[in-house]
Length: 317
Image 1 (tube, one colour):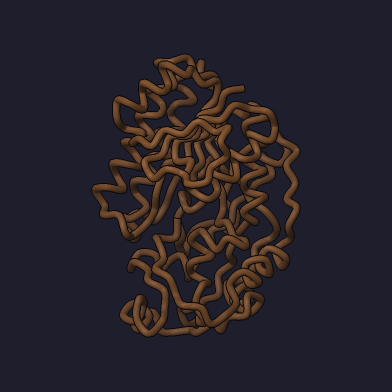
Image 2 (tube, rainbow, N blue to C red):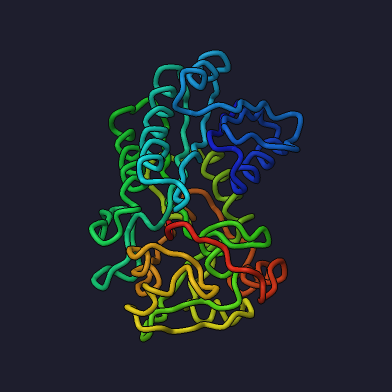
């Protein structure tokens, strides 16, 4: 099968590409960042997915399937750029798929689609709408991209579409929102709150995406690994020290004194849990995670011992 991956330069996308290549599939990647050192068997196009040249790749190469991973949540990109990439890029991918006979599309989204708030249910199912966007507008374009992808289930019935809402990834690479939040010696928390955090080992996440493709899923699916853990426990298992602050003080200190940088809206995500029910995905694909919660945290801690410098953190999405 010929599989095209927009956003192939991302770490998780690279893992997916390598698994597909190892499974005997032909892999094509589109990403303006390029991929230095990529396997020579992967055909790479360093172009913007929204440009006409990307449409030409679809027209000439006629992929059978697409794994769309070209979305961002980084604070380093301004709101307009995030909107262009997340919603504009997603729209372009679906238009190319419809125009050039793509049979299957996997949209890789985030479990933060559901939002974090005091009235949210503990376990989110796929039928629930997004919440709390008013308090966290940075997630709006990611939610819009997810909704656009979900709409294709009815708008483009000939395209086998699967929308995956994957929880935070963690692992030895140190990539991802949760990993960045844990990177420093201290992990800030809101005084009086210790929410459950749901995460999956980065290798398990790559396996889950490949499983969605292999199973020819159609529909919306939550994807998660082992049981969630309280943020304070995750910090301790990673060899970090959790530091609770009153919320007003924490809002001032974030990005200073060695603490990670978060937007004001993201504070809700370290107050309230976002935990998803992933039973439907497991039932439809037979997926089973290989790394439990403590091993997953330990693989991160081994690669990034406590005491390293804190890194800027994208919105928790």
